Image 1 (cartoon, rainbow, N blue to C red):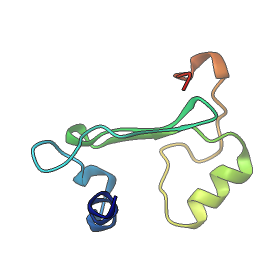
Image 2 (cartoon, one colour; image 1 turned 135 degrees about the vertical axis):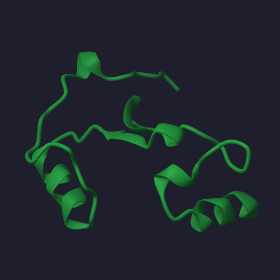
Image 3 (cartoon, rainbow, N blue to C red; image 1 turned 60 degrees about the vertical axis):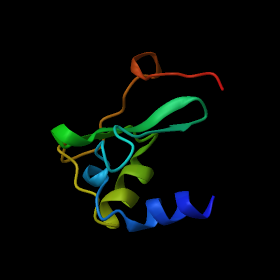
Image 4 (tube, rainbow, N blue to C red; image 1 turned 45 degrees about the vertical axis):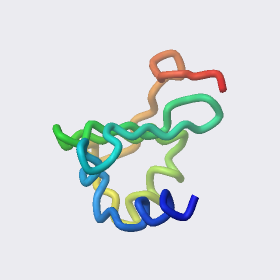
Length: 83
């Protein structure tokens, strides 16, 4: 587990996760729904905020969004994985 932690902490950007040196195209799930996914080699990253407070918090810590305001995504359009 220490090696994985080092790998996580050594990355400077979500786009540093490119195959051959790292895993690629990370996804994080929250309550079974995709919360964040990335395509590192295309420099694409989508975050699906549940509410405006979450959106504003992420903006306040430096996350830049394409949309100037919170745009909710209906649950039916989100990727769901039962785990």
